[in-house]
Image 1: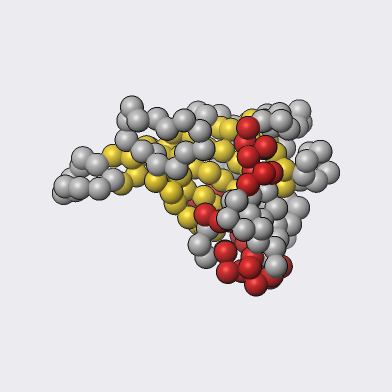
Image 2: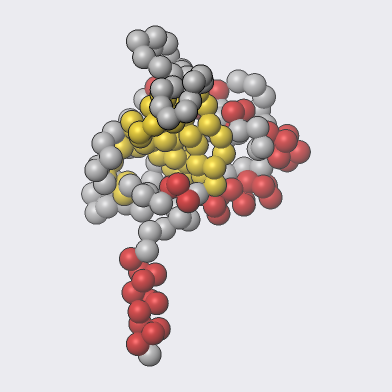
Length: 181
């Protein structure tokens, strides 16, 4: 009996990797286990606005919840409850034995993209965790630049599958890929 109670308590406090969790005021709870999700891709120096030439390019690492990934492989679409994590890391080129190129350094920002049709009028919302100790975040406005760009340029259901080379063939085979937007 005691062992079963311990397992139940552990499951009750364990972080969820299957979908979003919200605080009492509707803010998204930071998913600290996002690095255990499925890694989709990494970009270096990608930008959607003005190019910042002041410093080295940044790395963007993209992760998605495991259940959503498995669903995508079967259907070519993202189920309700999908969460993407965009981890932005500094790039550096000087260290240890490295003599050229860039490698990843500290986390600069974390953005979460959530599909929750019951909660968000447009079905998807974005959240930014700009500090590593930030545990809750409010959604961006539905008219935010992120929301508008993803709606207009996402290859599959407002997501940038066009940047995830392992998922492009899946979306094409399932007929959900909208092309190089």
